[in-house]
Length: 356
Image 1 (cartoon, rainbow, N blue to C red):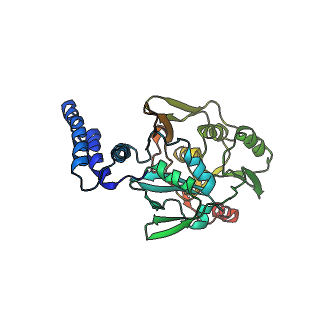
Image 2 (image 1 turned 120 degrees about the vertical axis):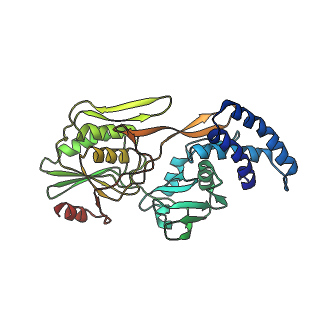
Image 3 (image 1 turned 180 degrees about the horizontal axis):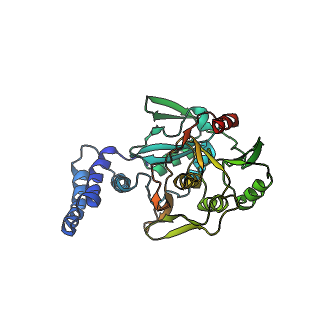
């Protein structure tokens, strides 16, 4: 559903004021009383015909984005599902919102998104007929899923605004996991965390007793769950707290119960701008604990955990309800700064960097 910007502006102003500009109970009461009158006046006095459904949807969405740019109001009648995963599987791109615009959080190698020219960290301002400033995350993802023809998109970078044609197509994600010994350095490539990580990774590490250092390659790993963070920490860290996942109504404390089997092993963590989720949380932990050398590119800051919450109207609210806190502090949009920038993508470059 496309919302008219004039309606969004008028109604969002009232609700933004409701949530952020007034804190006295009486003031809030009178602003709420004004809202029905404002809607009635706009419907009667606005120069064009007004659709109240569009107006209300825009008001809800505008108020939500003032609190959480990635939040979405999904009206009754619109099927709700995890479209982020569907968009990722179809295009190899992970989309969120920052500063009210679409934000490209990750792009997978060999995917339609990479072939089109998308880069992590770019601002996505338009997808087909939708402007991301006035469309919810859910609307943009829904459009991408339904599209059967190439989609004309507009992307803004630090240098320029560019038009990109995104074509739906099949692509093969990187292998689940692999390992290779280069001299005395063991490379463990983990572009995705799978359910057998807790058994596969320890067995693979023990298979190379001659290794003197480990390079954990977490580039392009962006959708991992908290369980993966716990598995990695249990292997590579000494006992103690590592962080938590916190929300207003639920929280989960995470800790290493006993020293990991490889807690004293020299460790390198290789990340890039598409490293997010639990992989980015692990990189943040390694950085703050000074446990590993971080190579590659700075990460972009992982998005929070989003949930689809059913409404009494049969609609849904998509809202961030929990966030990683590593050693007491959130990661948020700050990302993780690597110790050494490494633009090259081959293992030889890593070995050369480690030898320098």
